[in-house]
Image (cartoon, rainbow, N blue to C red):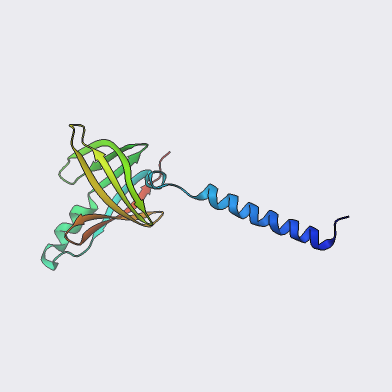
Length: 137
């Protein structure tokens, strides 16, 4: 015969089980988190005399992630599309390997700020912050 404490214990385990399922179901890998269109928002660690020009460049740069394809659009009208893969992922830092299509590859290091923002490390202790403008369909 089940007692009241057995019922409470079973209900407690049910709540714990449902919580674990929802946590596992909601976690996305780095590639899934990047899917969609991202637009540059700002750039950090720029000398004041270059800030306006650099910020304009950042705001006209975009990344589009669709499946394993990545398109980078730059202000000069250039855009490149290539296959990419997650080379390394540790905490909120993700390193991508992007195939240029000519046998060469590029590497990009992104730091996820939250689900809708990341920073692209462009070297010299500088990064461009990107904001998600559209999720993948």
